[in-house]
Image 1 (cartoon, rainbow, N blue to C red):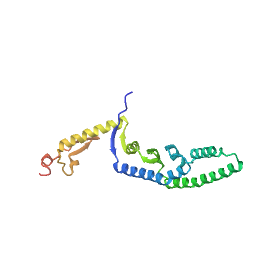
Image 2 (cartoon, one colour):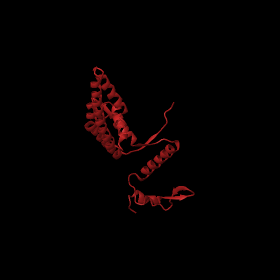
Image 3 (cartoon, rainbow, N blue to C red):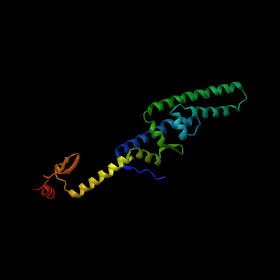
Length: 200
């Protein structure tokens, strides 16, 4: 199947830079405030875990409880098991307070999480993430009508550039007139002025 034609109209580099900086700030926050808390639970950080703790921490809670139950199963005493389970639950609840705080701190910036990656236990803005952010700040023409209009517009620009040859006079718009809904040559156009770069 033939790829549908599309034309890059513009690329907002200022917005790209702003969003990349914001994504890096989110990664830094996760490294400083979130990952240490995940490690305290004995869980290795991953993309899935990071996203989970910044939502409802359901997966992280399940992982933690599985680890706790596995460790507790080594003991025979019901009293010891109950005591250890209570302590583990307290640790989890305290840690969830940090997760809630993190969720609050990065509210409105959750869209950047999909651009981040965990590598060797560190949250980074990946090269793929940077490119995805940049792509989101590119504006394309995709409909056939838009592309047709763009190409016609481009031909007009090229023709004007050839016509003026780098010497665009003031009030150059007066070279044109409109009749019956179409542009026409203004019969009063001063070509000496145009060709002489403004001199009569």
